[in-house]
Image 1 (tube, rainbow, N blue to C red):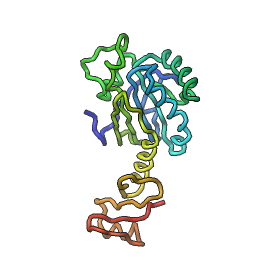
Image 2: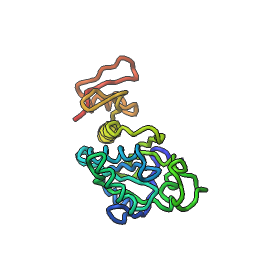
Image 3: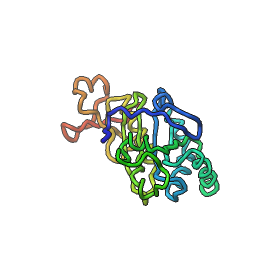
Image 4: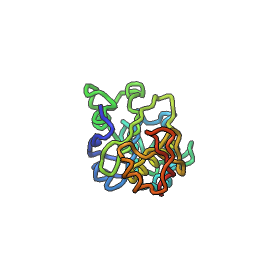
Length: 218
């Protein structure tokens, strides 16, 4: 199983925007890779439209978005027309064609024993290809969320998580439950009180010794 903190597997693949090597494509950016079990599936159609509408929000955060489906790029291009017709916007980010299932296997979304072709496979055969990966500029996995086929993904939550990850990567803080931009944060446990006093000279609220709450750093 892939784990948080592990380097995301690199790969070369065809996409709707040309051939890429994944790590080179990420460059110095953050990245979101989200996968789909089959083209022309209803829930995924709505998700791709949702991400296209939020593209400017990802751009604002310096985050590259890339989709994956097990069907060929030529099928993705046809699917994009349906997405634009039904969702009001076509995908404005690359979509990987994973016809040999190699990327799905590298990311442990399908077992190594699965055939090396997407041909003839149904959405149910590929139902585990429903994961969101957030990858940092150092190419390590910072988040993975797997969804069932029947439940559409909440990309506002993905943006919220990105805000938290980027904040906590810059400052030695953690974000509490239901945190959103502008809310108070928690000084990370790895920071001593002496160091915290230097970083947060205005002090902190401490309802318990292990909880040190401060305004969100800017």
